[in-house]
Length: 72
Picture 1 (cartoon, rainbow, N blue to C red):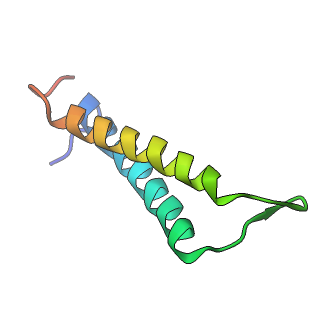
Picture 2 (picture 1 turned 180 degrees about the vertical axis):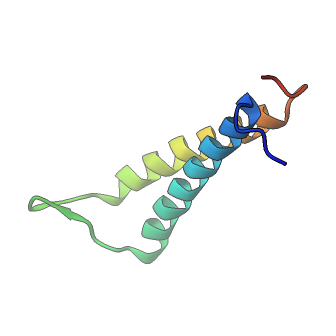
């Protein structure tokens, strides 16, 4: 079962959250949905930056969670 006091458990949870956010950025890039914030149209390049950052964090945390022994 899962040990919620384990560092690896929380690395995987956090990595999964970043993975979901990366998928959301990718979906906006593919679909071209316009995002309007207080009258300002959010450019798509912001999603490209968000995709790169969150995908990097996802991969890094996910790999880190499987490295080495289970740590408390």
